[in-house]
Image 1 (cartoon, rainbow, N blue to C red):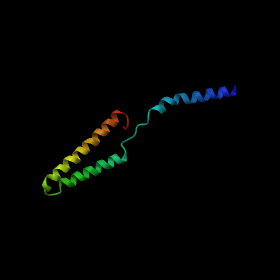
Image 2: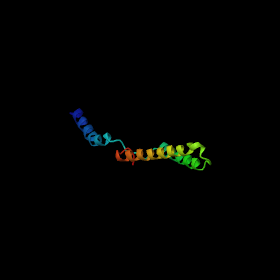
Image 3: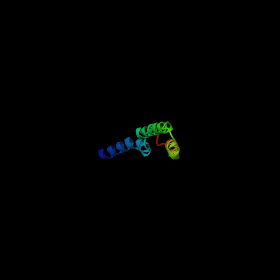
Image 4: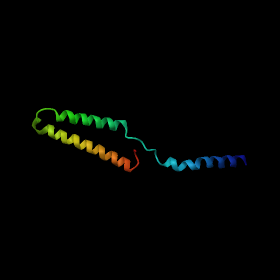
Amino acid sequence: MKIATLILLALMIMLPTLPSLSNPPQRDSPAELESARKQLQGARYNLDRAGSDWGGHRAEALKHVDEALRELGAAEKWAREHHEIR
């Protein structure tokens, strides 16, 4: 009888917590993502002030940096929509 009572008590304690265990907790944007964004913004600033056109390569590099920044924004939006981050 004591074993059945202990099992019942354990189930009563565990069952309310099971649904909350199935959903992972939401996280803020990872520090690495924020660091990458700041570094890309710094690279963009430096490229923008790099002087000559460098045969069109500076402009192309700026386009790639801008695209990378847009991708980071899209990744964050997706993560928020899918409850990966807040």
